[in-house]
Image 1 (cartoon, helix red, strand yellow):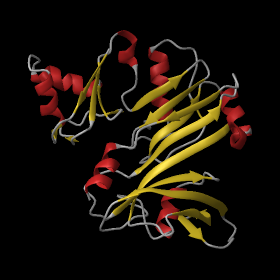
Image 2 (cartoon, one colour):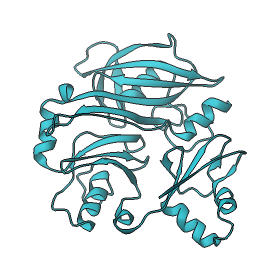
Image 3 (cartoon, one colour):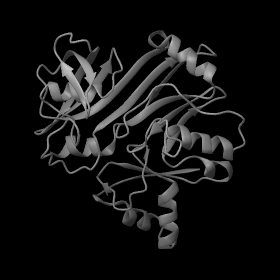
Image 4 (cartoon, one colour):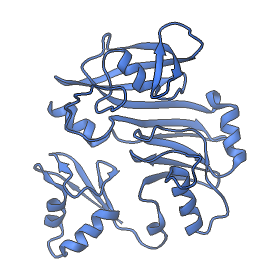
Length: 289
């Protein structure tokens, strides 16, 4: 069951919910916020989330098995062979250390709690601080099918990033050779024995300080977009590794999101397309500053 409300004036999320549910105790409203509130399609539990005019707040009341669904990611699609999930920032995709909390451990807990006889297997990864769409297989066989024919199977994988300044030209291609350094990924404009990385970018909107830019990758190297954005002279907003040391943005997350994913199902052969909204933090900055 869903209830949707449009924000008419700027205010924080908790007071907004209290106004919509005047007969509900504050503790019950907080419980609702912990599990069932979405802003512009993205689940949030931040009680002081700054709502802006025109935003959509959705309340999704859940019962039964829905309460088993993970809180650290959103399950966008699930069938007997695979998941498509929307990973939240701050969560690892995968780790060799079984004690680490990752997309795989979270999904395995969900599968166990709902009595499924299968396990999650990583197909591809996102950086810890990058949010967005991620493919996860329910068997090694399906994971291998993706790996063996990745370029033919996955036909659309796009990111949206908020960058400092305005890239010139506003769209184009950036390529370099990347190598893993002791602390971060190093980039070279010429072949130095590293791995070739090719990024295509397109500026979607600009404000005085920022540009909202879509990236599509020919290659999927570690930190590729973040490194290329820095090399272009327009680093990703709030990037602690490759961005400005004196980043003064009013957000507390890396502004990079894997927002579109399209692939051919390796078992059914059906073409599937998924898209998530641009995160509200990005929209707020690009629309106001």
